[in-house]
Image 1 (cartoon, rainbow over the protein chains, first blue to last red):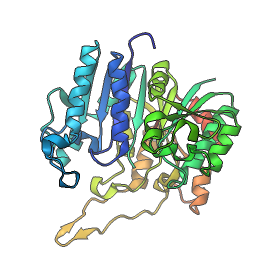
Image 2: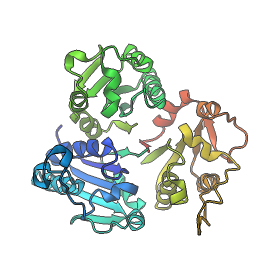
Image 3: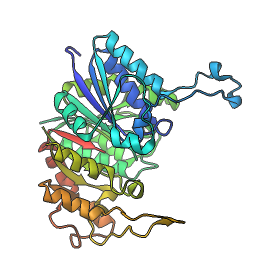
Image 4: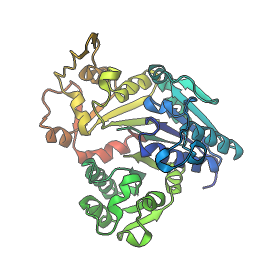
Length: 137
Length: 108
Length: 126
């Protein structure tokens, strides 16, 4: 696929709740590897995805300590996505819906995440080549 | 004529709305639009040979291109030889290609 | 850019949010200058029914004093100039006809949805 593109993704799912989160990151990772500019509007539970206080845990059922378990933390996926995009000449602009952040008490997001409004979704979509909405159920 | 990429992440065994989505794909194709149906997550479950899905049968008969996410297939032990005729395994890149191409891309 | 907001999921967190968050974001984006219309389908067709009453929720001393009012919020979009389409078959499956709906909503058959899609640059299915 020739040419640099800008794609917007709207996410709604809280982490650890839906396969949509994994699929969304798989899609955005492909875009990041292509050096695309990626715009993310995190709405509702998705504002918890880059929450900085996520903590990995061991899993006794798996017989592994925390280090061996390497439990996925979605905040690390966000950071990895940002690094991947930048290393390929692209970017990630991750906007958390501010009201959604406040009602959930998750203002402590990782570096690079900013606070915004639904107007940001509209403006990001308008500046993008395409937009994918991934609603929750 | 528009290009449509319809992504189906749900399966017809849990969600009755999946049939309506397959009908929508058919309706768009009947109207002359270029339609690709991309199955992902549990949406790939009816792609296994022998699985029952009247909606998917009809979409295949209508000649709609139907792709199934290779990771979702592998995750559910559906190998290439297990796929029903009319469904092709595909990397998820096809969705990003569609978005980059400007296809009207709709998640369901 | 003209967008069709497709709303299918309904009554998911309306008590906690005091509204439907996709109806709400449609209001908010319209206020920010968005050119959008709405298609209510699936269970969300019930949002256009008059007479919904979500009042009275209470957990011990806590009381819901500002319950959601979906018909009001749908009517508010109509007032803002947003076209609200609603699928006839989804209404019929749920025992609803064209009567008793919020004024201004426009029933469309499922067979008419491709034409609606064609009339918009993007389709956002929430």
